[in-house]
Length: 288
Image 1 (cartoon, rainbow, N blue to C red):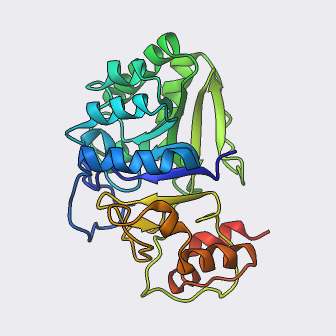
Image 2 (cartoon, helix red, strand yellow):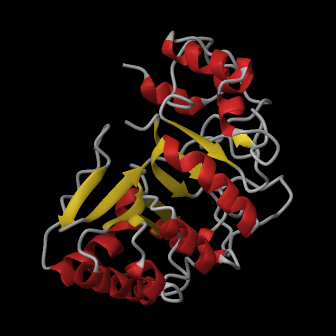
């Protein structure tokens, strides 16, 4: 068995959109160089069931994305890709012929957030064209269309997407979005609608919420930023908790460091060892 369910690798923190729900990027804008990505892949692929090419930024905007996918195929990694979908057409053939791509998440809320006055159907037509080809050429590929589940807004914002998909797929989508821990609705084959509610990105200047709690950070996942810095979880977007740099130290040294081990053991014992964790609203989702 692999030690982790997923490891996030941010190949770039640069995005081709500017979403209101994404925090302002305070780090230096950068791409992970190809040789550094291969170095990272060699170290972490034996540890994880899946690698997620996402943290901040748009992975398809990486200037060497084709070479990155070649390396993923070469090292036989299982890749989950999260994209806003704007560049899907450009890389359609590459993605559908990749042996590594296991799942693609399309953040439809990104387009709606950036282009509220543009016709949504033009975007959805391009997304659906990709989905149709994927279902025909790569039926084992999981596809998630991501939408926000916000009670007061979900009907108005999501309804055009529901109606579009119902028309294309000749199906009826249950509008009940009280999903709890089950966040997906299966549409057909391996195509799903995936919902989530907005959250606050944790910051040291926030209010301390609790000294006790648990998280899956360092338990089933961790994240690597484009500059090689390692964070304990995918919500540490600014690398406030820097456990070490993968370009300078081995991943074993980093995840077995006293700080990382104290965090992981703390989560298992419902103790929040780091100040940032005590101010993270997302941790409340793990309370029974």
